[in-house]
Amino acid sequence: MRCRKEKKRKGWRWLLLFPVVIGLAGVFLFYFVFAIPSSEGMSLASWPARFTENFALFLETKDSEIVLTPAGKNQIETYGLWAQVLDKNNTEILSVNKPSSLTAHYTSAQLPIQIASSVIPYDWTFARLALCAFGLATLVLCALIAFTLWLSVRVENPYVTLLVLAGCLFIPAFIAPTGATGLFNKVLFLTPYRALNMEIGKYVTYSMGKFVCDLATTRALVSLLALVLGVAGAKRAWRARE
Image (tube, rainbow, N blue to C red; front, top):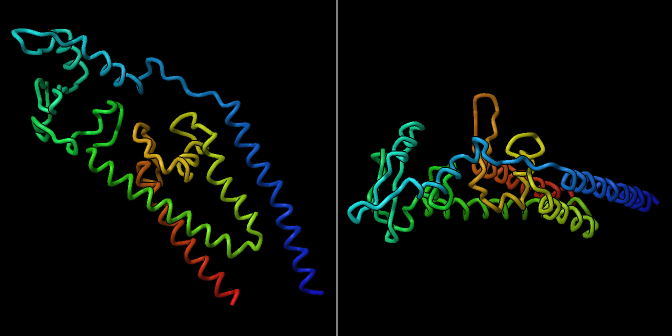
């Protein structure tokens, strides 16, 4: 009789959990449908990209060489910028106020990721980006496996486990962040679906007092914490079952 009562109680608990999950999904979808995305236009955040796209207007050919026009020099000096123009072989053909740490020729791995977009805030090369993306994806997947192990031990019904995992993975896929600030956006950037995408074009930071982390570092720390807690929780739950 006691076993039947405990099973009935557990059944009611998971029956009540289902509408809660559906309700949370509804809130997220409501926010996604009615959220107003932040406009970029000619804002300060999008100005570097606009300037880079129009940089060709400040270049001209003189004696078979590419040189900077007086208007281009004025723009660079006014805003304190530097520029480096490369040919198809990744060799420098023009530079203005170039930092001393940069070279005149690059291999594909040495190219800065700003080649893809000038608004990327990370001072990385493509080789470092590939290593960081691989390491972060490995941490996120290991954290998901650990969470699945813990959930499968705690929950007897496999359909509930599947429902929770599907919600964690696929609900954030239909929700786009409306900016780089705000608690909702900060949490959304840490979800597994978005964590598998580096999103290097977004400058998102997480601060705790004087300690400030970028998005990639925060994702790695959160995934590592979830991995440790998931493995420890699953191990403890298995011992309790035995």
